[in-house]
Length: 223
Image 1 (cartoon, rainbow, N blue to C red):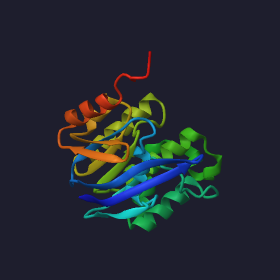
Image 2: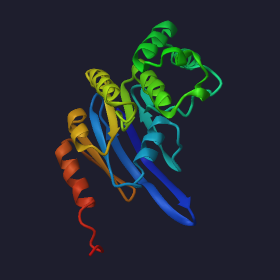
Image 3: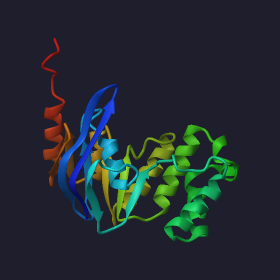
Image 4: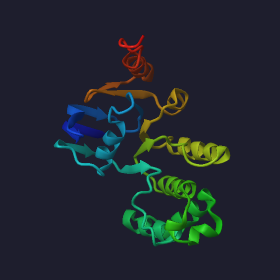
């Protein structure tokens, strides 16, 4: 269970205020995969970052009864001068998991070959994504935070990534952002819609999608 209590967050960009969260009170149930929907710029990624702890709300608090992942595939915290393997070992120690098991899993999953033992700064963007996603899947969490889970790698890698993620969902919940409604229907049963700082939760994903579709319907100012 992840509980948001009186969460507010505002950004100021070029002199304009952007409200991401306006006194949000909502509970994400344990073991449920929830699609986080909202138009571009609504603040979905900022919401995930607040839940993960990477971003602090202006006010309110977020509590959980289980473990929460960092945003799946996020590679911003890797040390650029350490090798991929060394970065994985560091994360294993931080999260208290078996170091050798995690290194073996990520090496096999990411398919980086000899690059796994080269500095992270030498990696291409695709290689960084493979390492980050493999590490995300190698550590077990009660809730995974996902922003476009299959965005990394070629078609074959995306298929493998999707299969592994769905296997994780047998024993965990998730909060998932994706532009693919097909993917959300495959991964999620519930939904939440973020609009103008208001987050509305639906037990039925179809209800959330219908709400989102109304929000992004024909622009009344168009034509």
